[in-house]
Length: 635
Image 1 (cartoon, rainbow, N blue to C red):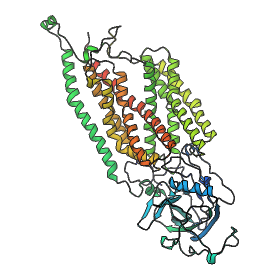
Image 2 (image 1 turned 135 degrees about the horizontal axis):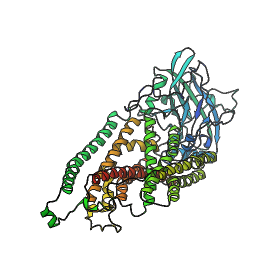
Image 3 (image 1 turned 45 degrees about the vertical axis):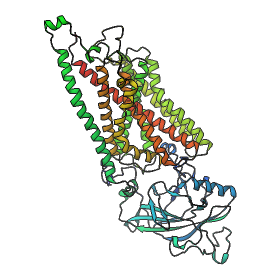
Image 4 (image 1 turned 180 degrees about the vertical axis):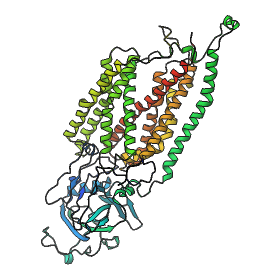
């Protein structure tokens, strides 16, 4: 494959794969293994092991594939299957097995069908796309796998017990064939043997079937009676069809990622243009209002007074009056402010690095779990950044309890996430879900936290406390803080915090829809080049709106800007959480646990986003206040 490129275009580019994901060349007639992954439902959000339902199992027994930590955290459990596929060897009406379902097993299937559970099959690391054939139309879906069955309008449930497995291959030579496409077309067929014969289950003597043809694949028109779910015997069958393709191996994921161009290119371009217009609007506002006003203010404040003006003792008003208090440490809770800023910087660096790595193709969806592992590893490594920044900021505030500050930095955000994660893990374990991770994976997570992250935070804090504190352009004039005059309602903390998050949210809400679809609707998100641009625009928007609001606050002689800047920009996360509550209706959830899982995980995401956006607003405001007060000539 060619060298990796920055994937900004919504249409995936060739060269998506990087070394480490190598193609497998199959000889003609060579066994091609079909693996089965977890059963998933967007309605319940509770994944289950494939063989938790009584499907046909391999004769040699179920063997789980080796999985990484990211796959375990994603709920993946990949097992072998009894399906027999051989490269370029078409076969039809193959009997897989015959199962006799009890009433309890039939009820389990009914429940899975009503809750819209889907199979997730894999061939040569390529997930199965589903082809659903109905009397009205044929639907091809490149995400979420294919359903276990379906329910009609009369609430009868039917099981998909026959599948037409379609595999596309690219021929390099007679003995070199690569899998480049994988589709499954499921059918519900009540099978009958010729002349009403019965089958005991032995593959040595199998009577011919009257309900499928050995010479061609199953078609909807050939189905005379469908397989209702109920106690009794069910026969599972499958067809295998191989189709040549001109698609190259390096491009085989393209159709999955674009979902066959289901999302037009212009949608992502609209997102970028929308965000850019918001930034331009804010930038023009800053230039027109702030630069003009600031230039006038600075000229007026720095002007040498005439004797007549000195005699009149001209009264001054505005942001200059608070120069002696503006850099007073934040009140209350200066230590907590430093801790939140340090964690916010850690998350910001992690987010930027993750998106950058994904944009150049390092985090391919072909490498399952790679995105989760990247997030974990980068967060752990950036612990030194959070330790350093929180320590230096706390030292600037003249704080003395540096051990407590560093401990909070190391344990506050990861601790909240771990407690919630363990709570969800226990709930999922009671449901016997694959979403509940094994003990060894949990031990690996805790080892990452205590063995690497915590020491790095303390190491960063050590250097942070060794570094001189930040210098400010004005010195604290009074021991007693200046009295803040009564503020108008539109400059109150509550109002500015509510207003501050609206425009940044508007800059990112289009991409947010696709990210939520990836998280909760089992769809692929891959336009990380676009996400990198939106991420940058979001940061610029947050910086600009926070500087504007803090400037108005200082003009009203209110110097308590530290917490205000953090909360004003952090309120973007509140709007993201509210939007996620609106998005939740798309899941059509019907279980209380789904509500707990969805809003619990979205709380963790939005808490992290709050710290990240709050940090951006604070850093921008810190730069702004140092700049304007540095331009004053203070007596």
